[in-house]
Length: 136
Image (cartoon, rainbow, N blue to C red; front, side):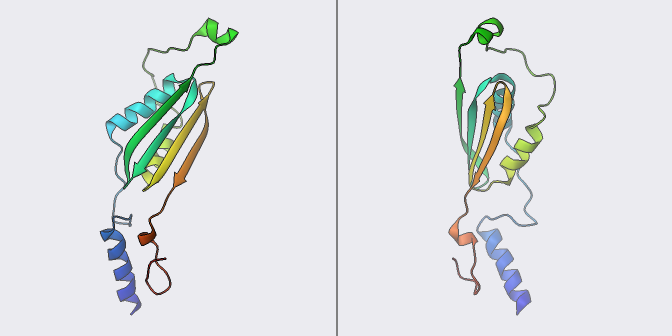
């Protein structure tokens, strides 16, 4: 009886599109990765919001703030050169983004440094099961 219910639970999760041990993590499309890398290396102050549905990035919102001060007048904001090396948090951001099935990942930058990575994950009701196998 328990073998049947465990097998049933695994197949219902797979048929609904949920993640299981046999479903590999999908790689990020190159466009999404390029936008994230460009944002991390060129933006001084702002945030990037990545919206995920069914494990795919469906929307990217970028807000960049320019604060004019004596320091910024001397150095400038615009960076044209490509980064020479990988950003230290690029791997963590990619892993967090791939782990989300439904939700958002917000990356906040201040003074050219990642200040906060905020992950909001949402769950579909049909993915949850109660004691007797019914949805919660």
